[in-house]
Each structure stands twice: as structure tokens, then as C-alpha cells.
Image 1 (cartoon, rainbow, N blue to C red):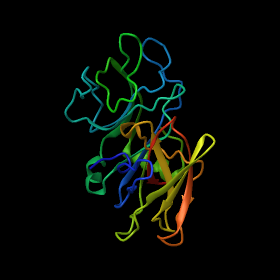
Image 2 (spheres, one colour):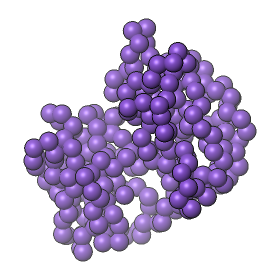
Image 3 (cartoon, rainbow, N blue to C red):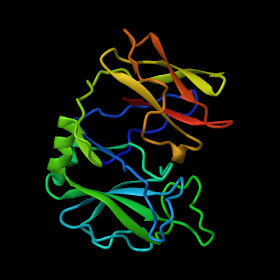
Image 4 (tube, rainbow, N blue to C red):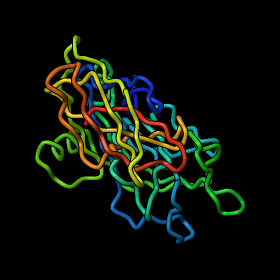
Length: 244
């Protein structure tokens, strides 16, 4: 099953953790400035799609489905910011990884603006696609090489080391506000892993990129705690602990 890093940990609720197999980690981004067909700069909150195609990507229909049934949307994210897509992480389960050994990944800018020229706020998926622009297409071989060699590429693919089956599950046990930041206290970490936090204004808006001021190594024991400092998402927010 493809996923954008694990499930939800809301405020001080229990957190879940991803990467329990040798999953493929696919990071994708754009350099910008990205523009719509009319020449205007992509609006903040616009959607990008990471698509896998066995051959040439055939495009999107107006309802958001793909023209070709062979093309597969790995992730659709409303993360446009400042005219580009920041670094974003998706995961593909190890059991499905062999499917993607051929073909290529494409990063596609979608145009989901309504008649007023606005994008949907806090939408989980686009309700309509007016048009699209493929910003980059990268083969799996090239994406894997760029990750291992540190080469700049729009798409990078690497394999996550397996998390032991008996690894503790992180739980957010406390939250306190300090200025424009929240300090999350996390219990149930392992010293051999690094941790980060993803957040959003709503559960559906939780992203995949770590937003902590700095990632933290796990504690020496599952009973000890670590603290992760994250920007506060307005008056309320939703958070999950992720593997860094």
C-alpha cells in the first residue's frame, strides 16, 4: 500500500510510525518558479501529483483521473509554496516495489483554480483539474542513482532500512506552547532511529515533510522522552511523529 508516511497523531494522542519494511522512499520537488498555462505563478496551496507511468505519461482528465489506466498517481499534495513544490516524501511498500522497476516517475503541476482564480483551501484531493504541466520525468534508475550519489534531481528514490518488529511506538505525551512554537514531548522512541513531526491545520492537511526545528535521535530507552519543537499551526493543530 502506498502511503504518505503513516497515520495521524492528533495533539497529545498516540502517534504511529512508518517505515516498518524496506519501503521505497520517493522524494520529489520542483525548483520553481512554476507557472500555469496562462503564465501566472502557481498559487500557494495548489496541487502537485507524483505519477508513475510504464511509458509516456498520458495526462489527466478534468475529474482528476488519468487518461491512461496504466498511469498511476502515487501521491497528490496541495503543497505549492512560493512558486514551487518543497521537498515532499512518499513511501511505496516493499511488497509493491518491483512494479516500479520499469517506467518513470513524473512530477506534475495541476491547475485546480476555480472561476474566481482560487484553489481549494484544505482540500485532500482536487475536485477538478483544469489543466496540468509535467515539470519533470525521471526513470527509477535515474531517481535511485540521484539519491545514492547525492545528485540534484526532481525525484529521488531510496530504500528505507527496516524498523525492527519490536521497535517501540512513539506517543505524544505532552504539549506546551512557547511563543510561536509548540514543544511536543514524545515517549516510546528508539536510540537507533531519528524522529521528526509533520503537522497541519486539519487531519487531512497533515503533510509528509518534517516540520520540527531539528530532528531528534530517539531516547536511550522507550520509557525516556524526547522533545520536538514545531511551529504552531494557528490556534489549533494536528500532528504526527514520523521517521526522519
